[in-house]
Length: 224
Image 1 (cartoon, rainbow, N blue to C red):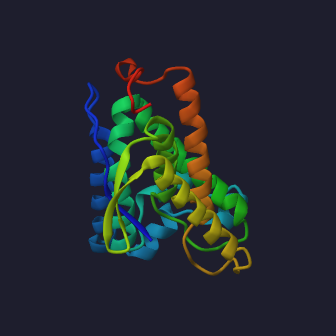
Image 2 (tube, rainbow, N blue to C red):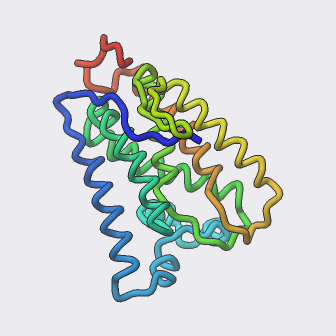
């Protein structure tokens, strides 16, 4: 099991204010959900994605709102840890506005892909993992040689982002295959959202790199 705790941070004219804002928003919304005046069930009914409803053309806005909800502290912590590690470098290199758009579109695309593979599910789908997967796909494009500080079992090692992302992606594919025969009303992680988000982020980042839609100061950097 891989457990990342940090990477090699870069410095640039763009500051990762959107990344840190998203962390704040997700934490705030989580505690507002469990401590606020409305029941968690009511919040989920309004803002979580239910695939069968999306397939009927209902509550389409939840494809975007679900990414700001989390089921428990572990779910929240995992997504915010990955956001804290990987998002700041990406925001610095592509800029604040592009990162904002990238994050939101990545999360929505990941949600759509999950729905398409789980059309009969009546369960709530929520969490920022689809958007995070898109960020990881883009990170692989822009920072393949960055060293990711990672716990492997009880050992702390530094793994090149290229290998870390491949291992992570393989795990998502394996888990998705293992759950192919699971009933639509059984819960679990949204593996297809992870896979779809990652591939979308990878593709979009390659286009951005090709057309140089990033800070030109990093054009000749070893990071790219």
